[in-house]
Length: 284
Ligand code: 13P
Image 1: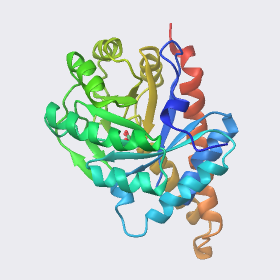
Image 2 (image 1 turned 90 degrees about the vertical axis):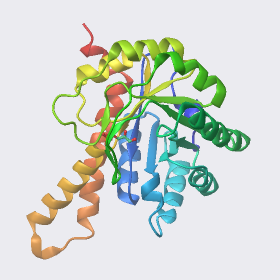
Image 3 (image 1 turned 30 degrees about the vertical axis):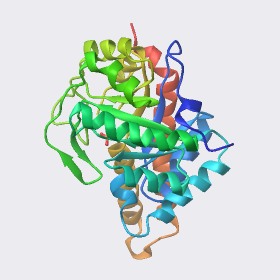
């Protein structure tokens, strides 16, 4: 099965389902995500965050993601998450990624449009998809903290999409990266207005900690891609600690990564199935 783009895997407007996008950090987390997708026979988006790609030597992990996607039994998008500049997007494109996110949400609308359109221009020549962001998400993601969130303004959505040429749009509707402080509170009215205004699929970041009802409503309102990061890290590290704890003297560096992979695979499979179909059971 080939490396896929966002355009290949994101559902059409009338088709109420979403694809899971999972943050990965090494070979084992990436293999776990793909294994989960193969188990469910569903397409998947394997993400590497820009701060992860920036670490010395991690371009080799990035290349591994592309190889894994090319050999997978289901369509796999290899996606650069939250790049803040053009150079990082270009680096991922050269490494063979099939999709990039340029996050200009910290800029003014005009600057965000300018930067995002520049990335799209290059990506389009290479057949690579681009996700943009309008509004800004708070929270901690891959070691980078954003203190203040800004809700997406639905009246700016069409202008942003048309002037950038992006393939998918990340929205800020009360969602946040990392663990939520208290109950997450999503504004579904704003989401519906964004969906009405947007000619392209919408993306929900900050999936960890949202309830099944919230995921279900988000899919019903038109979300087509849902990002999960912290839950992947949590499952991986808990499996690592538990397996090491079972036999501390073994320092089992053969068995522990396999346990981590299995744990990640379980999370990915469950989320993919829920976003594709099971969500409908949570709608009255
Ligand atoms: P969480 O870590 O909150 O699941 O968010 C992941 C994300 O949105 C990556 O872009």
